[in-house]
Length: 171
Image 1 (cartoon, rainbow, N blue to C red):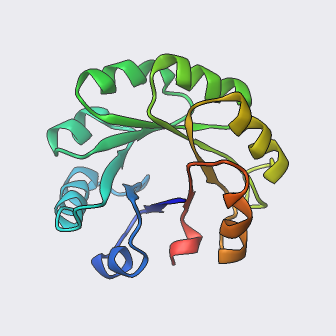
Image 2: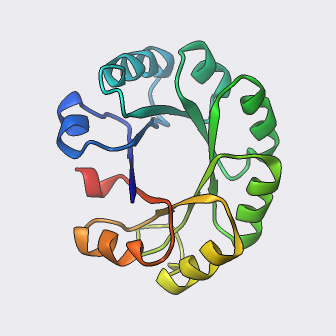
């Protein structure tokens, strides 16, 4: 199961400790986003197996040679623009229909959330819903939302997800 670390302030130690396959720099508040994103990409480069993604800004991701961009659920129109720049695309989804739309538009991966209870994210989808979705789609799906323990990760392994994404699991 692939591991996807999401953080506004990832550290090299954190990346080395957990050895995620994917890492996202997501900072919605920094005025120095581009500068911090550049530092994040440079920090990730020595870890050859790690794919570094930036949040929302596919043009910046391209200019900094990130592996890809993680788009929000309101950015379906940007999938093909990002792909045209040679970026891998992850897009946030919250319904089966959104996952199927992302697949049709050529996204490489989706996050599907929330799977477990997580603050301010609505009713959790649960493992059975994720399992059903994984049988309906060929998309590489990262389970997201409320994943804080190895027990939850173990439970997700039987659902057919490509991997899991989390903020709190990696803290």
